[in-house]
Amino acid sequence: MSHRKYEAPRHGSLAFLPRKRATKHQGKVKSFPKDDPKKAPHLTAAMGYKAGMTTIVRDLDRPGAKLHKKEIVEAATVIETPPMMVVGLVGYIETPRGLRSLTTVWAEHLSDELKRRFYKNWYKSKKKAFTKYAKKHAEEGGKNITRDLERMKKYCTTIRVLAHSQVSKTPLSQKKAHLMEVQINGGSIADKVDFGHGLFEKPVEIGSIFEQDEMIDCIAITKGHGYQGVTSRWGTKKLPRKTHKGLRKVACIGAWHPSHVQ
Image 1 (cartoon, rainbow, N blue to C red):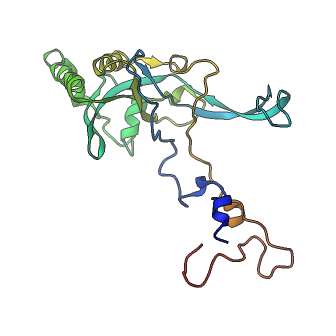
Image 2 (cartoon, one colour):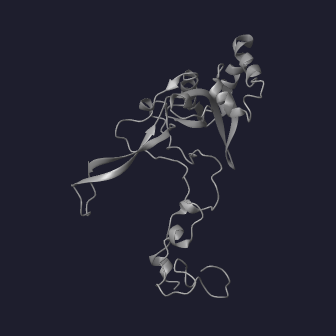
Image 3 (tube, one colour):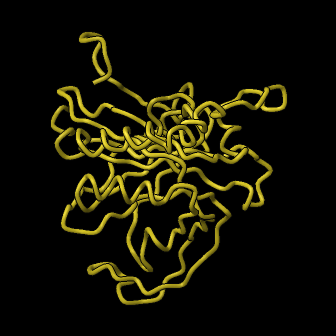
């Protein structure tokens, strides 16, 4: 049945692969939107926490569907997005092997919920993270910080801000903030650096990143479905009732030789 691969190229969700736990409970942005220098500098992503689910009634706009232009009831996820705090700036340069970070600049004052992210045991630690770095802002009027920002403007091709969530503003019991990089698009590199530096230690509302009714991508980690078989993982057909040794299996997965799944 090699001809079947043209009609049915694949079954099942690739979310099941690889068959292991996620590295961390936080989505990863694989690619940010394409940059347009003609636009004003702006952020391109935000962080949120799933608050729960509800149902919505909406008019379906899907030509060809039976319920086109009719009201349908759908499940909807509610995401809570407390303002993010911008605490740093990262500059990347192009290399033959992709992007490489050139330098990172941090804000002078960092909150404890962010500092917890850099410790395994916060209560046992001396809580001295970034104490020496903060002195750079005071020494010689922040000469070292200014030098790093100028290097970014001169050499970098991509600028991203370091922003952390304010988990204390959610009902979660967690105290450790989540940290992520958010790319700045629009304007020249100098404009991007000035825009990012101007956001230091300021809260960023989601309304300043996305507009009302805008279509956006949501990235998250699945809750997982446990150790499942092929029927639920790949949607293969169940075998007839009288089958020996189980129904939720694949009857033939290929020849003896070549000895791999066809």
